[in-house]
Image (cartoon, rainbow over all chains, first blue to last red; front, side, top):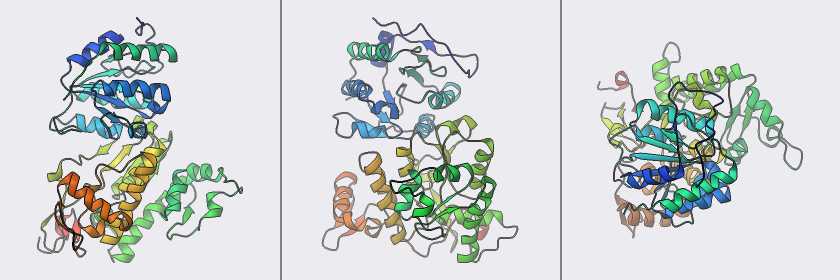
Length: 174
Length: 272
């Protein structure tokens, strides 16, 4: 088991409320228990190893919101992926009447992977203060404004942590 | 890269300040900058450097001149009407890319006041300002028709007044999409949709999911792909197509009316 909770050092702060450190097994359980989870991937996912992990998560049944130009990585893949601008997505998720990408309603858990740290923190600041949806950051860096976040990890540990999430989850949205 | 892609597609690109300097540092394999490769005139495919960043007022000034010259609007003490004209008719989008100064952010806000939507880079979110619409909320996308004051449904454009984008690959389709305006004629809408679709295919890897919301009639569809797009509209969105005439019978949420005069200002409506 990988320890992803050790290094939660921040280099800038967004206030006194910080994300709880997140273990991969806890992340997997939260995803399983969620009624409408959504995996939100950033442009960093186009790196091959991360893309494979995101695809594995998608194959487990997690719908994918591809932000930036990350949709390119999912075009030929057998997963449900939709393009959306990250800032717009936060705006849509703040609306309880939003029907989601599949028309079945808003989401209750957003999982963020492969984003720019400074960009994601700004977006999650909106979630933290105005949107009653839980957010998990499974990025390489500690994201203060998420509800729960991995600590700062090296590349290898991050990939192992993602593997651990994939091994421990089964989601079926159909 | 962003400027070059838009210039190749015959958009007019106007730049200023540090961005203009930055663009001048990039040369192609022949050692030429974009300034040397494209026309320096305010015409299709033209590339202009207006000067320092405070000279951005010349760029918004060009949008004001469209209202003054083409529509004969009074531009003295008439900000509301000019901004309304630009928002509904002038297909201009601002881009403040990169980690930018407060001055650039305020220039972007100034563009917003004049009805020009603005995209900032991923660092731009730090200014904590975003004005983002909800394109799925179709009932709210209406304007008035100045001919008679009737409420007129429109496509969700521009989708935002100021927002952020993550990468250059994301911003290019956003730029093309947000050049679409309610008053576009068929030819204008067709050209804008062509660029939007092509940029999506090139940078996001596939056709946009939402192109159908901008289609008012078959004449809005890109000429080269019209038949395949009609098939797609029929199969995926349930639109009714007359295949003999290759015309859309039922489906679009709005009609094309080239003489419609979209406005958000009640007093400009003749029967108001």
